Length: 359
Picture 1 (tube, rainbow, N blue to C red):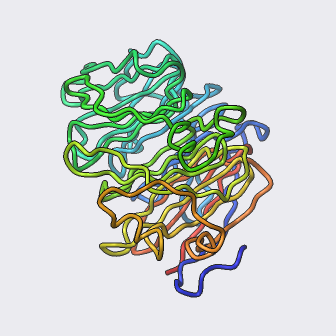
Picture 2 (picture 1 turned 90 degrees about the vertical axis):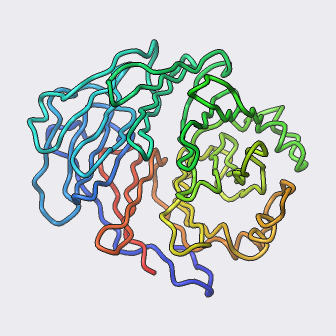
């Protein structure tokens, strides 16, 4: 592990390797994973979906309905229920019931689904797919509510609800566009092109090779920030402003290699001001960042922050810890259970990696 700043006690610890069930192909990659408050981990794999315990028990469950099917995304809604996306289907399962049967399913997307997410109010489920469309379902009546289309030029890769704005969602695509929507009105509120904003920082390579496609996104728990992992290896941090000001690009973190950043996630807040971010790259690195420290915090406090690239000395200050594995990361999830931070991440293997964060 890399050295960390002396100004913080946060660090990775207790690395564990959780092996998959014996009937899962050991050469099949895990694509996603979610930690449940009930101390279970649900894993989506190229060949199915399975449930692992967070503790030392080796008892596991396999979702029989999804055996030998690719499961691309999982979203939990409480400690027992979760949605799983496979192909253009989304299934609802209950861990207390027979996992060979679904509770409900949706099949409205026209192409393969890349990510699903349920909003904090448990009112809506969003599904983005390879066609560039986003389907939003009303969970009270289990019906399609709205379709967001004709804005992304190709694949819509990721989505995030903005929790303090009940009608808003952010979508990211392989067209290098991040779009903030009022999904009730099916209205784009703001469109940001990452090629344009990175060019303004002096990076002219974004138009020539390795463009900053949107690989991953996450909105902070207080809905003040958005982080986007890009195809050129950068992480773009946005401030989510109130009212019509929308998303304001603040600064760029360049630490991962140019192979891309397929996963980013904000940790639950330690206090009212400390924003911690996890990032996982195709370079095999998992990084833990404090994005609210020192110069970055000063930039965030500006009413109209100017986008800039973090300098090397600044990166050393905000990088808290790092871990390297010999595989490309595919997803990250984190949770606080019994007062302890847990981080689960997946890569191009069938094993699940589990970490604690000490603080």
